[in-house]
Image (cartoon, protein in one colour):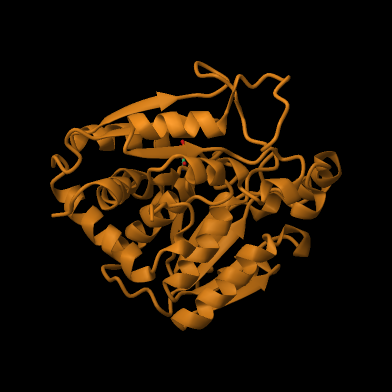
Length: 337
Ligand code: CP
């Protein structure tokens, strides 16, 4: 059966750790022909800086060729609904697009954000699931409703910073932050899952219960914590959440009860600008490291002082995207050394 990387929950923690171990070796010795003669398709339905650059460069560093496709831009718009009468803008169906790419390429990576109109539709992750169903080759999630590659880079950065693979007992705060627009919950879902898998004591800090994550990810985080010996709690109190924290991870996301009614959510989000990560909040912590997946609006999500502080892992985490994705591609379609 073809193995995909759509959510880390489908992979054992041992397998994820092995990817990070390989990434550490690749970071030390980046040019290795582990994918010589291979081809990968990078399918972007949304913009990117880090993901596109790191996958494309990573493929090259391992001897593979990457082709970047932007459906609806320089590539044909694609239909995903089974049985669709295709009289709209789409010129081909995923049943053809995925199978054709699967004949050219050894791996297909897909970025497709939610449409932000109906969460009951978006939560099905239809686009990447369709690629996985039809491609016949491994499919990698470059961010849909989760961001598993970011999880690997984040965990790698934390292990590097703390100098240990055992993060059990660390107090980890996943804090909602203000952003002028409602953003994807993907990175927050992912952070909750990987931090609990790593056995940390995870606090989800958000303005109120309307900003809780989808129950699928809340439940996964709780289950992970029970399995790993960590914990998963929710807090709406900034001071107690930050107090004694070892890790502060920031992300903004839209409140799911208002999904598709974002004009109703806006006053609530606007009233919570004070969730910005600043020096005063970080002073409550146990000299915590700060990180964010990037891109991040400075002095909106986090102050300049926090972004540029010695404990800021933002650049190292982004850098690690290159190494973990190389390890992932090598695991799926190459060799390891
Ligand atoms: N973190 C991340 O995925 O960055 P990009 O959106 O720039 O790819």
